[in-house]
Length: 177
Image (cartoon, rainbow, N blue to C red; front, side, top):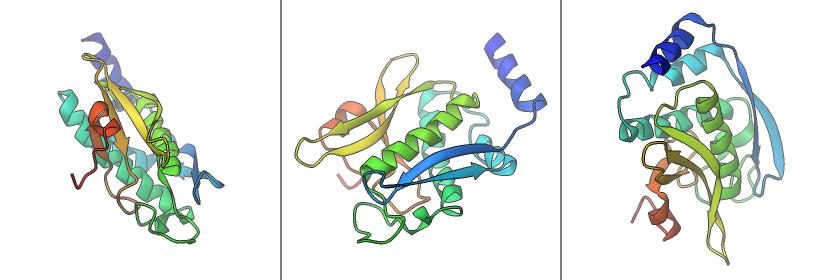
C-alpha cells in the first residue's frame, strides 16, 4: 500500500522530464541515434498505465507503450521507414530482430525507470534459433516469475508489440500462428 501511495505521489507531484534514449537500426545495430521523448509524450505513454490492476492488463499497456515510443522515435530517426520483419531491403532505418530487441528493451527501461511497471521487471534480451537467430526483449512477472517475450519485429514501426509467454516464443510462436 505504501508503494502505491509513493508512486501516486511521484506521478502527481514530481515534474516529468524529457528522456534521451539510444536506439539502433540498419540491421545488427549498424547505425545508432539518440532520441528524446518529450514530457508530453511521456505523459501520453504514462496514461496507458492508469487504472492497471493486474499483470495481464499491464502487458497490454506495455505492448501499446512500445508502439507509441517507437512511433515517437521514428519522428526523430529513420526507423519510421521500418516495415516489420526483414522486408525492407536496403532502406535507411530498416530493423532486424536484433535492432528491435535493443530498442524495445530501451523503451521498457524507460517505463520501468518511471515507475510505470507495477507487475513486471525488465530482463535482458533473449534469442531463439541457432541458424537464423531471432531476438526479443523480455519481461518477468514479479509475482509468478513467468517470463514473456516482448517482440516488436513483426510489424511496421509504431505498431504495438506482441507479447508471448517466453516458453511459447522460444518454440517459435508468431502473431500468425
